[in-house]
Image (cartoon, rainbow, N blue to C red; front, side, top):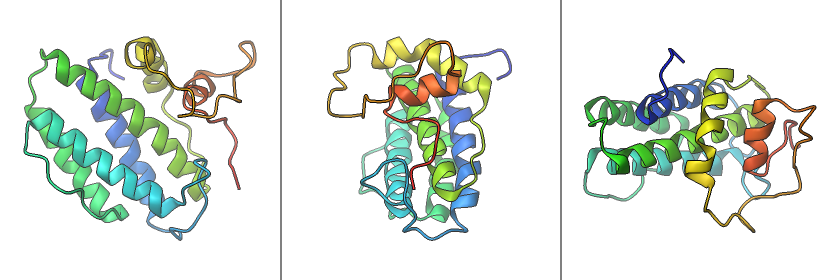
Length: 178
């Protein structure tokens, strides 16, 4: 990051990371498994498409509409719409800040999921991950996560990276599920 950690900047960075991940996803079969054991790559990409469209609506104040069908091309279009909404958004609204933070977590973790599914295994940007970890208590502090994420992956504190810590918050571990 360029020394800033405003939630809208974090969301922009996470959207860029997701966009890069989708380039690899467009080249593989949508039936590939993902770290989300109930989903294949096509289902994950569709979920990301819905998430990006919802983030755009929340940040821009647009009227909600049915989520788009999500292939990689459509998600890239939705990401461009999101980035436009972010660039026009006021920076001083707490509701937009919390939405942007939540979206940054969503897109970053799912970018990792997409990379794992495609075999790309590109690391998440260390600066983005470490900044998100500082915001984790704000976004996840009071959320009841029991049943939402697999909690069987607590990282050992002396042997894990910031990426391992972030992934563990969402029930993932740093190795591909195949």
